[in-house]
Length: 281
Image (tube, rainbow, N blue to C red; front, side, top):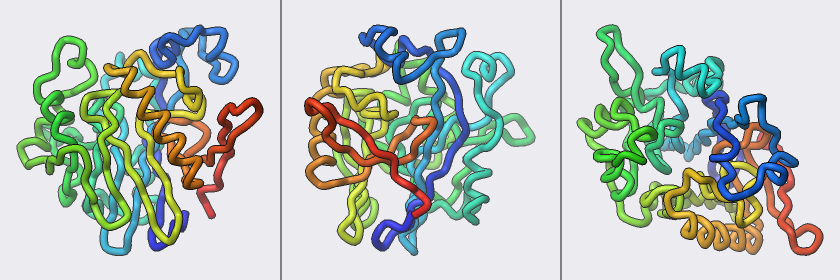
């Protein structure tokens, strides 16, 4: 997608599945299954969407998917799609991992930081994006370094420690990567979770991250049980949805299996609807 002076490529690290009850929290199953069907194991389909912003001088990747450091049991539990991978999609748009200059981490959960590393011939996890600045909010990195019993299963040391040795670039609250591309802390999902605003040529887009991972979450109360601070999610989502409506901004999704980007509109009785946007235009 040509986006003002930028080009946005919508890359994917394939699909996986998570428990629908956990994904929709307090929302009763008869409601969420109307929009998002589950499989026989109550799992719903998610895709790892990783936008790539090309400014002409910088190649800015937002998140880096699941990676492929999974054993057979884990692949079966999460129904991880082996192909395509994020590296396949990078090659599709003519880039190698070494061409990525910035990796903007919305957070460091296993499905967003997986390609930070891959296993070498010695069975050791080594960095993939060797020329990239790895940007992360301070609170997020503090938690990823020392996760508690609740957080430990979603922060994998092999995704974090090798990059930490090289040095994450840490910020507080907000960080302008380049003029027109800004990371900002949302909280909610994790203490240091971030979204990304993209502005160029009079156009605006917002990558919500886990504030609204799929179109189904346009309903304010539809919040994941995975969110550690759900009331923060509620208020930030309310703010961002109002912002996108006011500014006619594109909404970019991190996990929607069918849609990379959409545009908000007020439907019947004031309910929000999302119209698909052709990302090839």
